[in-house]
Amino acid sequence: MTTENYIKEFEKKVADGTVRLGVIGMGYVGMSLACEFAEAGINVLGFEINEERAEMLRRGRSYVRDITDEQLKRLRDNGTLDATSQFDQLTEMDAISICVPTPLRKSKDPDISFVMNASERIASFMRKGQVIVLESTTYPGTTDEVIRPTLEAGGGKAGVDFFLAFSPERVDPGNAHFGTKNTPKVVGGVTPVCTQMGSLLYSKVIDTVVPVSSPRCAEMVKLLENTFRIVNIGLVNEIAIMCDRLELNVWEVIDAAATKPFGFMPFYPGPGLGGHCIPVDPHYLAWKLRTLDYRARFIELAGEISSEMPEYVVSKVVTALNDQCRSVKGSQVLVVGAAYKRDTNDCRESPALDIIRILIKKGASVVYHDPYVPSLSLGSDELSSVELSPEVLSAQHCSVIVTDHSCLDIGSLIKNSTVVVDTRNATKGEVDRSKVVLL
Ligand SMILES: NC(=O)c1ccc[n+]([C@@H]2O[C@H](COP(=O)([O-])OP(=O)(O)OC[C@H]3O[C@@H](n4cnc5c(N)ncnc54)[C@H](O)[C@@H]3O)[C@@H](O)[C@H]2O)c1
Image 1 (cartoon, rainbow, N blue to C red):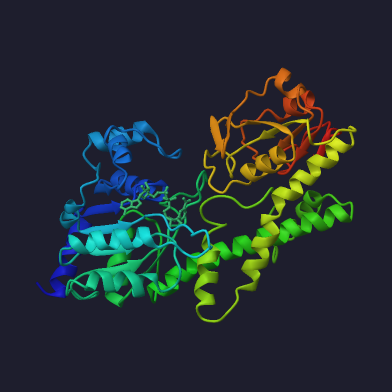
Image 2: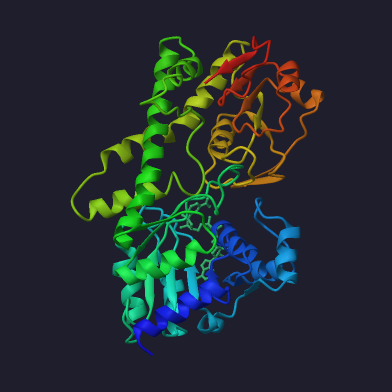
């Protein structure tokens, strides 16, 4: 078959809905994408290396908070979503999306071993005419310099025998307004026809597709977005420290600044960076730039300021205890919220873990509450979430709000606590804030 035939066949399958999509890596991103396509009636097969996870999916059991068991079961029963750990079925797919993790090594260098593994598996079972898209966040050049040669090693050529593109996943877990469907999708192929094929695939389920000139550009788009966030979060965290020195309420300052209808976008301070993206992704960019003899100074500084926030929060606890003539050692401290983000159960890189560790190291007796995180393992310490009963609250010398889950009863928390260190301005709107210490 010629390239034109591959294009025509793919266009036809997308148009009549018979296109088969394989999603490699059924984690948060892969599951969300797979469900979006399956909801549109597209046949999706999830390729998951973790057999336990694949089995859970087949039984219609979700391990991702934004996706329910009911939705999985419904999609499984109507035959649009299935999962496997048998990678030979990759041959049957018309399109393959790679959604595997891209973590950092201890040295803060990118670990693209999962992406490599996925590409090698695709290469082993590749069929001509397939459309392959990398979605994992990574440094500019990965698709072209790492994936393309792996896939071309078998003799096929990108843009001729198969189609390769990068399209960053931009979903915001827990966001009630923007999901996979209504978040515009950037697509950059290694040739113009690859961009066209990738865009065609996504336009089947996503409202707006934004084609760009290359995978390198699309990779950089995602890193710009997350660098923008890390820098602004670092900035506002430093502004919070400055306001504290100036005896100003940083939240009042931000709210007033945000009334400017142009040229200002509010970011809010907090206990530190968390999650799989913001603390990790900019380091991919900084690493790539190091290989080009350039230091990404904004990223380094912003990361440094925000990584000191857990210590800063603990210093607030120390002061709050000091005001009661107490030392941290021997005090009872309650940490409210373990997840890095409100209304999620995701504890990856959560600053709550650092705050608990520092407090324990200083000799405090720490308990935590998180309705979405029943237990925590911190080295040799195993903790279980406690209920926020008046008895538990009044037994603490200090309560620290680290994650402002929307289900928290803030009124009761303030009423029954001795003192509340509030790192999120979660107590805003409460009439009596006399016991509250803001970040
Ligand atoms: N979670 C987010 O909010 C988010 C948002 C945007 C971008 N991203 C990016 O998307 C990518 C995936 O993130 P995630 O949060 O879904 O990760 P995750 O850890 O939740 O899921 C990854 C899944 O891939 C599986 N896996 C690993 N290697 C595999 C292989 N070779 N074959 C098949 N399965 C394999 C793992 O078992 C796991 O189930 C990362 O690059 C991340 O940076 C994540």
